Image 1 (cartoon, rainbow, N blue to C red):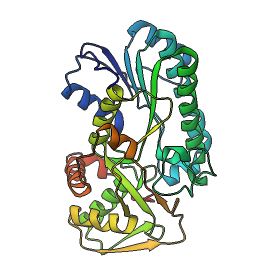
Image 2 (cartoon, one colour):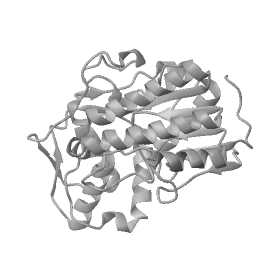
Image 3 (cartoon, rainbow, N blue to C red):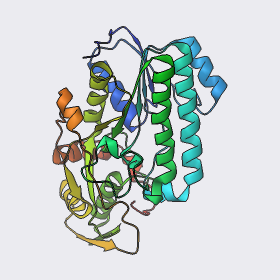
Image 4 (cartoon, rainbow, N blue to C red):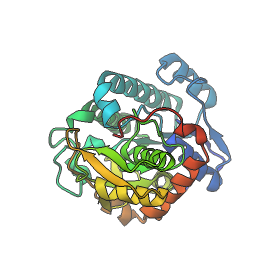
Length: 323
């Protein structure tokens, strides 16, 4: 154990309204943290360097979880690569520089499993970083996240601060993005299956062949892992966060249909990209520290779909691509 964090510590969750940040906030509250700090993007633009520096100088957080990022699925990443690399680089540099200058004691930078090479040996070990070419549909986002990892390592070397980085697998849960043009595969499948059910559609078409294998982790499990790592991990190397279990996109689509209660036929548009053939993280280092995920996929999907059904506005608008 590194050291238990005082529950009175000033704890800033960057991106506290998003999928990951909101889960970290819930977990921190449940763990007894008393001084949580959050700012919406309208209150604080993390792309604005002066504003970010001023915020850290005024608030003086002692603990930071860096969950703010511009994210999206295959379509969004491949359509807007310039925006993805530019915005994420600016946010990361501003927050990490401000955290270092203001004396933040512990910081967790969250990357993404897409940092690893497209054809990395499976399951993907942390040592695979920068050993081969990236998946081209999200290479701009991946390069930004790799830069964040290297900045964390540089800050540790130069200033001796307890900053760490972790690479989550594919995430899902409450507060996910269900917009069909920009979402990741799982929330998009939930929405498409729900709309098919509501409209009485007999078929649902998804991108690709359905054969790629993916790993999915409920965001509340990730949030527990974040708090666990802040108190149990201090190493310059990134550490993977995942379940160690994967599933094909085709099997996932059927599981989603079962949870939603839609019994139609799933069709595949093989003219659209599959992305990386398989992406399963090796989580042996995390498990060796004593952390295990606890929410299985079927239970997590039901929880997420129940949440989705309580947000009727999410189903508004025309359908679009699912990945």
